[in-house]
Length: 200
View 1 (tube, rainbow, N blue to C red):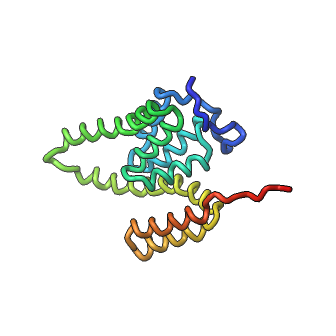
View 2 (cartoon, one colour):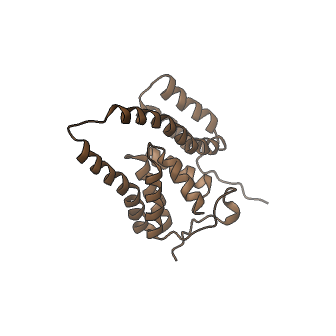
View 3 (spheres, one colour):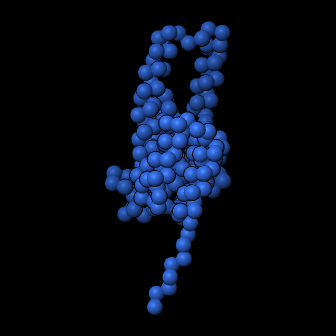
């Protein structure tokens, strides 16, 4: 049975989390395929969080760290997140299995839909349904973002940096890259490792 050295203890898991399950490449493929099938309309990070907590693979804080890295690295967030969790749990094969699991269902559905709808377009009823699903997707996305905000509020300067990021991007509509470069840099400096003075 493959077991990640980073696996949290049962006591560290949040209330309601399942007992730790094996994290083999096959299990990662199965879990992330389920995540992809659950994510119709969006919200894959929220479904990922629910799945990894249910498997006992990560704590909320560990998920928040991986989710933050997935957001900061180039590429689709859900794929980045799957690769990070897969590599963390079962190495390179785990990363491949998790990415394959998250991509295969959507790829198959999109190929099928494209074959059926090419040259025809979506009917009005389906267009309306998709607009309604977008509202649900927003709510699901918030369920993944809120734990990250909780973790951010517990680190040094987290509340100020989070507020400045929202102000710069959401209210002032500034460019993403300079805002991230400045505020992520400030966060790294504020939370750099510090020497602990030796006890007498």
